[in-house]
Image (cartoon, rainbow, N blue to C red; front, side):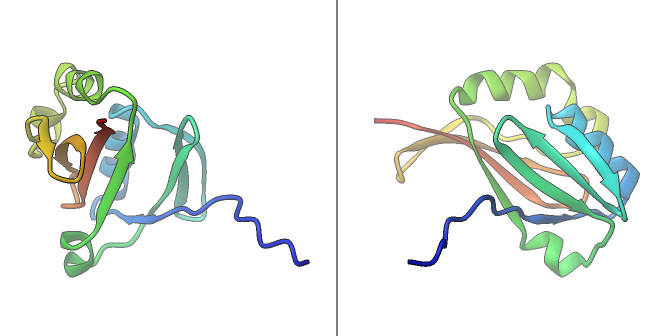
Length: 122
């Protein structure tokens, strides 16, 4: 039987201002583990993505990241305390209960990418 085990799947997140986006990613709590060839690798625990030094407005406006967390309220508070909205001029939404059995909030990054930070509910 062939080994079809998937080890990891990562998105390539577009960046309009590459240096600003790197700072944003660190400020929201991700660690930049490497930065080579215009594609830094960010992670937080087992969650990871690649930031690309590439921007197309249509792509960024239609790109969405979903971050599933254990405590959405703690994440929202952390984003607020870090002053992310003011520092980066981005929108940070309220935590809301969604019909798909999650509580989440939205966060736009400096390139216009929508991040949906969510917690499962029973």
